[in-house]
Image (cartoon, rainbow, N blue to C red; front, side, top):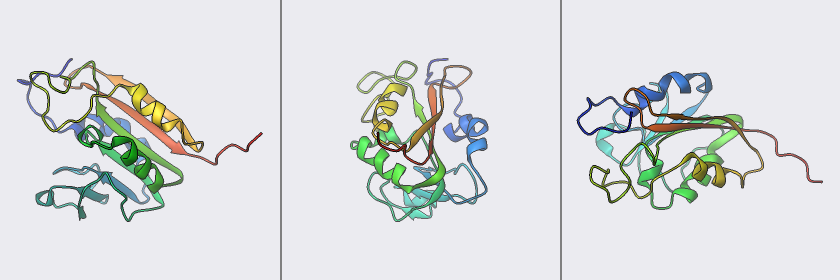
Length: 171
């Protein structure tokens, strides 16, 4: 189903929770751009809007005082950042070896693009999975675990999971 402005609202985090759960270990994790509902109640939360009650009320695009996270999760937030590549690099830097970066983003083919009628005015960029895959290729310790597109029911997004591994030796 392509995005429909008249469809009943369901938080994006609820749409991907089932797919994300296998990667959300009992360890330390952060939900970046959590909005009013975090992926898990014990997650460290970061959101620019202080009314959301996040652990940290601050911009998620710059460096954050978080390291060695078992998982870093973000749902429908990367498209709101003008410097999204730098933000993605910062987020990857928070993940500890063996941990996961879990992203859920609106899909360019299933959601109104920037500047089109019905588009979210807060979005700076429209994404295809390849956009994220291309940026993540720079990290030699990034292993792609999942890349799936979802255009059914009330979804119009894609889901990507990377695991931080030991970088391969040179040569």
